[in-house]
Length: 305
Image 1 (cartoon, rainbow, N blue to C red):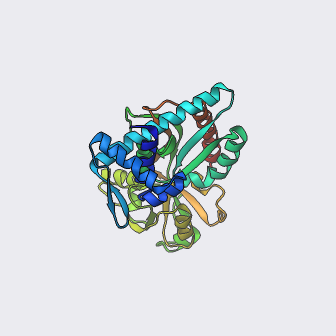
Image 2: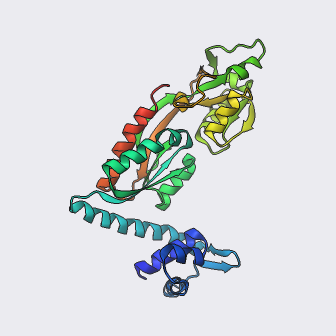
Image 3: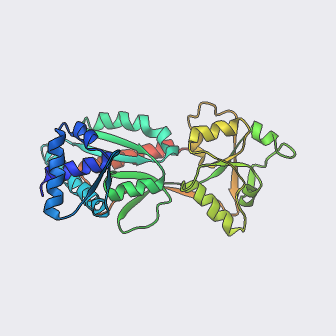
């Protein structure tokens, strides 16, 4: 078993196709197939099932994929540490961001990353916290910003920001209510009567809303499920419902004027933005530099609008 074989297998498994993997690696397909077959023969296992649409992983293949990613990640760290010893911070950094934050910091993060680390490479992935944690475990991500990360011995976490969610309304949505008015402060139980536009599960905000209302023996009145921050706010602006989000999600929103925010209490819905990384993999100087950069940008982006 050698590194070329492992890299070949991982790339085929990730892309689901020998043809696509061969193109990505710049390798003849017969050689790529031979690498994977040699690996299967040497380890006495079948890792990939070939079919007309490509390949799928067997159970042993899923195990090897997880470990193979870890091996390649460790090799990349070694190379990066050697580059650092020469005085240059390089390597590759993959970061996961939640949609509500990605919209605010993707551009400044990319610009500052290029400025501070011109020899390094950046990959940004947007997704829900559940997917981000899975990416850390599998080695696809080096770090991520997630909401309300549960404690785990496999994850190192650092609190970046804590804030209470608010009800976001518009003149159009309030006008459809009985009396056409909405108080500046509302009990959380009011969410059982207001038409809400929320992301689908397992979004952290959605789960938090449902969990806390359940403690009050209530259920949220969900008018629509929409997985897209801009789309949710556009729908609220049109008067189709209300949103429950952190106040900073309105930062830099082009149509800020139609919105009002209303505090929720008894209890508050508190969200925590956490910077997380795998506790099983060492952080390089490049990673530490990027973590500092991320913390600074999150602080700036989450200032009240």
